[in-house]
Length: 286
Image (cartoon, rainbow, N blue to C red; front, side, top):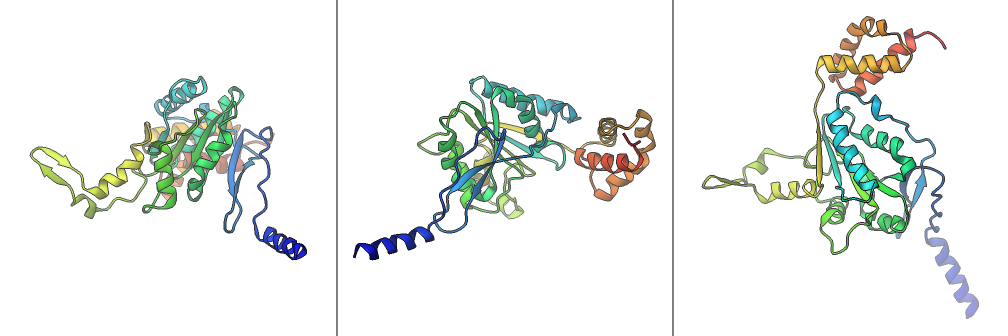
């Protein structure tokens, strides 16, 4: 009987997901939350072996936005009150690059980054418990965050930010980027639910629900499209960084404008991509 029971236990063990590997905290300054497949899957923190070494000084045209997020991050590192941050606005303007730049600048002061995919936001309590006893300060980073309804991740993030009887650890903040201020699509039909009582405007329940998540971020930082002059200034910076001479920025001007028209955007990302293309073709070999 005991042998049959042991065989049964052995078969059950084979069906269970393997135990997650222990976190190697010294392997990196950035981690990704990974999760095995299957029922009762458990997650773990995977060190990022090649961290993007973005410098805040390379981010041109967004000094006010950098100032706000950096000040909040310094407060966090110093153990002072700080807010969860939502960075929203035009694509390619440096929202996620600010977070990478902050990690590059402040990792020696104990700042660490944990990247969490939208579908894994349901694991926020587990991630928080995992890092709660650590001496480092962790940014839970959700990039390009958009929901299409009351998904599990939407509900989990909403509760984690400000809606649960428990709270996140003192060494954890959530930094998220999105092209949408309210993180969800907005439709004209929803605005028809708005009621007017005297001179007061009362949004409908659907609109209120969509606003409720973004309102739980204490700090909103907005980003806007660059004009032509700003785009060309960013281009000149990247050409210089990539080893081109000052005169190259003027020589590349027309091609850079045509490149932006083809991409339909004068963003910092587009300027960087063009600079790499142009420098690769024209810069002298080192």
